[in-house]
Length: 320
Image (cartoon, rainbow, N blue to C red; front, side, top):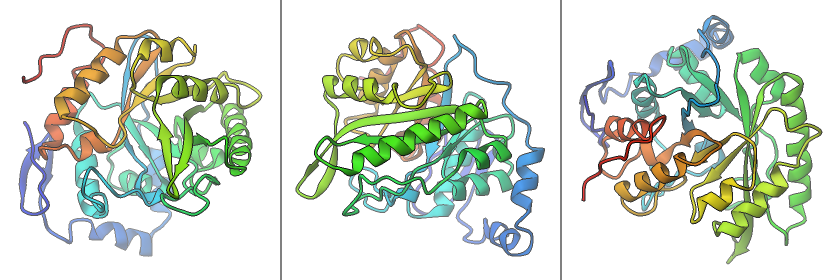
């Protein structure tokens, strides 16, 4: 059943999850954090894990680590992701779809989802560096302020993700590259996946912009895949851009596609994903805002459509 999540009001059940607008619906999470904070670790230990990734089966992971970097905007709404209750509603709708394999989240959101029992049988990827706050004067000094490899191992996670922005005109880039290399090694020591999200970035009018030209994405991959003393557990997380055939020819590493802040119509976005998913080496989707905050408000519908793109070569039928 499709579900529409508006900024207020109630919504019917979707994939077995019911949404309402009771402001107290997550009050129990605060109570647990006050009275029994060890419940997070117990929930992680008791959680049924995903059977594991396999070549030939594309994975569908929902991303929810944007708020920890102060990136709350979706489209023209600068605070779309600010309401934590709504974000948890939307995440639970997505995760309740059996086609969704897992989540990528910062520690605060991950802990909420563990306490809610929303990660049973799911892949779990922690967000490791959130120090490069959106709009920060030293945004490119993207320090590792989130999950550590040791914490992810204790949680029974499958890996960690790191944003790796490379700005040739900013001296902070070298520190980010060094920290990323150390994180890759620390994850590999524990046989955990290092999901590296590289960009060539530039500063324009005091703000950081990622260069999404084909050659820039290819160059970012070339730099990122050489980080660390081993690449055995390294995956790439890359945007869908023009000439994705050339992009995917740049690496032998398993690669997941990111959604980013959605541009164009929903149908146009899905068509671009469909074409990229057909390429060799593409292991799946790791998408957040595009699906959690779709243009039409239909979270369940957006998730179902995205899921239909994976593990099939059949053309997607979208509205004209």
